[in-house]
Length: 262
Ligand SMILES: Nc1ncnc2c1ncn2[C@@H]1O[C@H](COP(=O)(O)OP(=O)(O)O)[C@@H](O)[C@H]1O
Ligand SMILES: [Mg+2]
Image 1 (tube, rainbow, N blue to C red):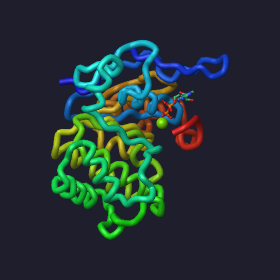
Image 2 (spheres, rainbow, N blue to C red):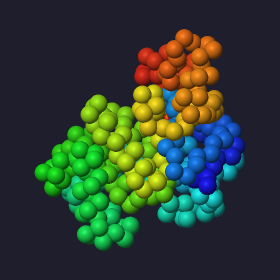
Image 3 (cartoon, helix red, strand yellow):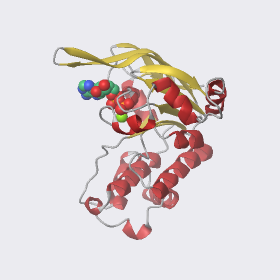
Image 4 (tube, helix red, strand yellow):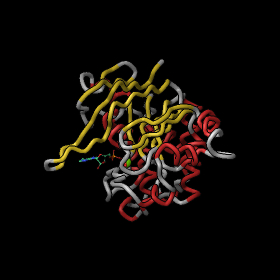
């Protein structure tokens, strides 16, 4: 079964008199149960794609469906099947992670007992210390807040999880913990996960298949192993980083510093 299908999706933004293309004829199929990576430099259209999938933006052209439901015409059905984590997560900042998580769990109809069990399970994997679960979120570091946002999204067990740069800005240890949660949720619950990243090590570690996006266009799609194999005719002992650079025409220092937004 197909979890997410994008057919010829086009999205542009009007900036004063200029039109800037965010997505240009994007075709993708994400299968149920897979971890799929959308890889691209800043400004390549990753967040726009995720926002359309999560019904926050409407495309100019094309169709997108989640488990067969159209993201525009059947947006409420889609909303019940997905959850999204992005860098701009919002909380009740004067409340604790525990209170925030219990509130969300309540909205989704989980019993308190069930919620606490899942919260403990997730927080242990993700390295959220029990003793800090009752402090106010406003005093947390950005990395810690990001972990709480990720914990909250996973709490409800959505069939399709959309993670927009889930590990950007995290220290190496926190990065590993979040990656562990992603693989756990995928293997334990068969959750389909679409994540965006420009960390090729992460993509290789987590994703069964990836697509490279550049300037709103999908350049190539496949398993990391297959894409590396194709690259062998052009580079000696290629890595996924070489594949990424070949399709985006950038050097890695440019990837880190160029482009717009996150
Ligand atoms: N709300 C917006 N208004 C105007 N332009 C936007 C908006 N959101 C995204 N864009 C433009 O669309 C392109 C893709 O952006 P985005 O999807 O955020 O890329 P990424 O997440 O890969 O960094 C960029 O050129 C960006 O400037
Ligand atoms: Mg982005």
